[in-house]
Length: 564
Image 1 (cartoon, rainbow, N blue to C red):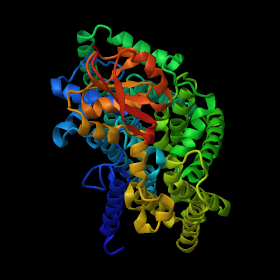
Image 2 (cartoon, rainbow, N blue to C red):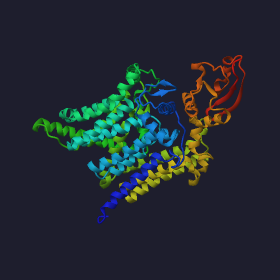
Image 3 (tube, one colour):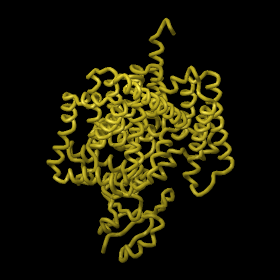
Image 4 (cartoon, rainbow, N blue to C red):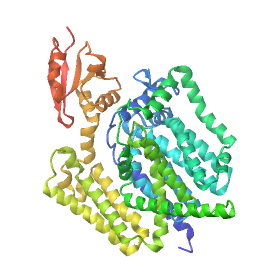
């Protein structure tokens, strides 16, 4: 290897590309494992529909949903989804390409940044980021969360590169990518960046970096990126400032108007789950970084007192700690909490973890820490293997044979990790942990039987089960077979994701009995099974008959005659 040093770089780059592409795109696109899960939740189908309608209208300014302005979020996701729709067609998977591609760019730039400024831990930091649950899940979502988190994190890495090198070139990263994050979610991006930098400056008693960070070419670049759309959308929609800034920023933070209230400590389990299977390593890295930062802070304080200011020590762990903690603390005070809000806190923790593993290669991890990591990875393996049974029979314990098979597989994953590290050292912890993650992704997307998991997963792939249970796509396909495209579909007492999902897949707004009233024309009605008795009063004087039941989501589908 010393005679051919370029081979090491080539192998690292190839490993990075192959694993990252697999983690982020496998099961997402048809050419790479199938079309995956249909759009789930209330947000995915709405955001995808907005992009579809903007593309149909050739309108790049006003987000439109069912023909009316939809001013909750800025336009970056819609623009990128419009481009994906134009290139690949309008599909649920193409609606997710913007998130997956941004995650890929984020992982790549983490690798490049670490190789430039912290060589040795770059591959660990990048692949830990790509394979952790938070990035894996949000990279596969048609939402604005990754649109904000990825550029925001790239911008923060650029700012720290400027802090270390004092080269203005790196400030372009800060202003450009924070500008992109602003176009994804609004003023929260520059606000968080300012708070992180300000607290960092205060901790290091380097207040001058705030003044020096204000770079006029960067400010002009930021404003040139952000202002044109905000001005244009306000001119077309005079209520934009009120709806977007007051209702969906200030009121969302200060009130429970949007019914996302959670406990103050809500984000602690969220961040723990987001980092799996690397949670134990990430916590160890965070504790190590906090201890080192406190020691350096005390040393700086003493030097400042006796010798005057002098920059000392490695500030990178301290910066990453602040970057990871501040979004969690800030959003913990919000009355409205959703998991995606703290996605920007995940990459600094995985970067810390990669750097920590690099430093531990010579000293080795403490045995109890390695055992805990292996047990967590094995537990995650067991849980994922049992997921199909839990989806199908949520009110029952899985049968003993499934528990034994899943538990034995999880135990095998734990032993594999421990033996691999004991034999080859910490350098192989990354690959030893990622192999079970790769197998689990293959299992989730329908090839479980090839690994002998038939007894655990029954006959259906896990993705198909999730699709049937949580997405409106399978039901929409059935409705397409029994109804013409222009047939009215209505819903009664169903979940919002069913209503919005059917609207996207049929490309036509679904009527809601409770909000829009009962359509006068003949239509198909989708009702929750537990509320069918209420239809007798609702449909007095109208003929209606059941067509079929959809037990996966406890729905009953009716044909309702026209009003006489």
